[in-house]
Length: 109
Image 1 (cartoon, one colour):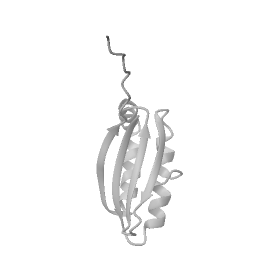
Image 2 (cartoon, rainbow, N blue to C red):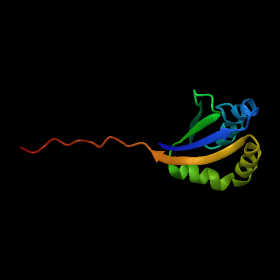
Image 3 (cartoon, rainbow, N blue to C red):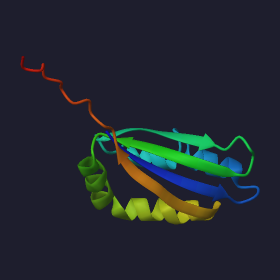
Image 4 (cartoon, one colour):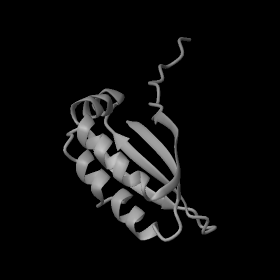
């Protein structure tokens, strides 16, 4: 699995619109679901109430994500532009893959 994590600081008063767009039923998830490689998204809100949020987007693979970005570039850019009006800060935390457990082999005696 390939995971992309973004962090945001949302503008005062834009929290509802931001959550509606970036949540699991929002515009981003709707666009992402057009790709068979998309697995889901989460929106996390900071408990300190500092208008800080994280999004966690899960994909089958980095190739699936890269293909989606290439194929849906115009829609992605339009939604990104619209979402920028809700935030003061948007930055990529990073992209990650799950570490697969390596098959263990019995030691030779």
